[in-house]
Image 1 (spheres, rainbow, N blue to C red):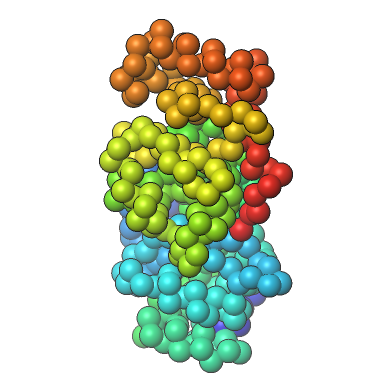
Image 2 (image 1 turned 60 degrees about the vertical axis):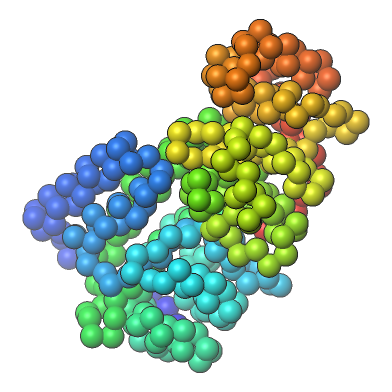
Length: 341
């Protein structure tokens, strides 16, 4: 689909009624962030936005960037009024989809398109199958995860195209949506959102992902060839109801920690020559992620004194002196040896 650029045109001033409706939508979004947590936040937020800017269907998630040899991939995705197979079907045309490449190349900017006019007919066949006649999409870079966050709205052939005023409102809304979603992830993994979080993930108990970093993507795909993202592999899902626990993922360990109705996944590679006991490693990862002694003791069914002993042993074996150094040491092997998506 060929992108229609609008940089030389200007939107008409938004009416007071539109501004008031937008304000109500953003306030509702803030309430959803507090009430629903991360589970259905993006879906519910877009449903609220649908009252302001109607759309027939929507798709969002985390996507890898443009590469000369590898087509873009969606690793975490959600959808409204599209089938569960949508993302996997799109994978077959992702390398040719000019609209997808254009939006990935212009982060932070809304792109609109209409008609089935992609130079590659396979892309048009895919778009016709789901009546994706009018499109409006925005992509944001996520430096902390190594991936990109995107939201794409669709209208059918019998509907009107998205206009410039809707583009302006959509852009502003997605700024709020992204920020609140990142804050939720930050709170769940107990890391500053500016820190490297590419080896973390957040999943529901059914294995569906709410967030995933590029290093964790790469580690899972390496061990489970053909893994398509969004839903964790069966071997990992089997462990979700056993948290807290540690499982092997190739050369690395994957620590699974409970967080209300979610599970936090953390990929780690102990320093060369250092082998921590599984319980020690789990306690260390929970502590590095921001949990207190008492919280770790409750999660692992241990006494606070035992947790202190475990952490003292970890500090000594890893040669670290602070919580920040502990987290870095537990993940130190990833930065030099793991490939990102």
